[in-house]
Image (tube, rainbow, N blue to C red; front, side, top):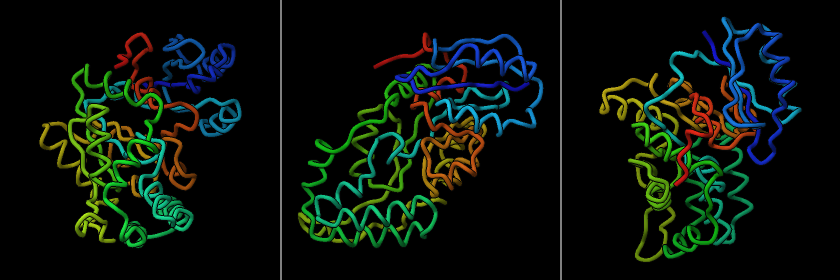
Length: 292
């Protein structure tokens, strides 16, 4: 049995009941269950339709995401999340680069690395090198003035943790940011790279080994083994090429507002919904949400 989930952005409320019923009828689905009025609905089907991606393309034009997944295994015991442009709206290194006066150059490298056009480790070293001499105090300034959470993140964390879920933040960014974001949102643990310093300024180097694509996969395997669960028990979310390994290994890998080349390699793509989409995917209704 498979569950079909249809989602729109919560503020757009673009999910039309007639469209949901029409798709349910076309695919021979069961009764429609509305998880949130005008925002999220689901129904069960016996097999994955051959025109799934054609329908997905049509619904994208209507501001609606379509996900088809096995029903039995969709409720997860662990959240594994990327940070930059996933749990927060920004790329932290780009914000630091703006403060250092090299914002445009670094943003270009970041975009190409996240799209899979550049080697992640090489791109990170190059970008960090451009931050050499930046006062360490700028990190706190960026956190306070430039960083805000992706909509739905606090509710996602609070709801999954209230149901016994474990939450890990694993980022190709920096511990100076992940530690603050993890503490604010309620993650149980976080892993990231370390910006090295020379006195009270950044040295322009990053601690080794670099936490990149493989390190995120390793984190998934290590944390699940420690918890006594399997990767199938994990819902992972990210947006960049360095997230593809963990998205592919997790039981549910969600490409959230991802780069096109990244989304194309994932079955679960959220382009319109916010982070609460990860709750709807697991069968939580809006009435089940816990808002901190």
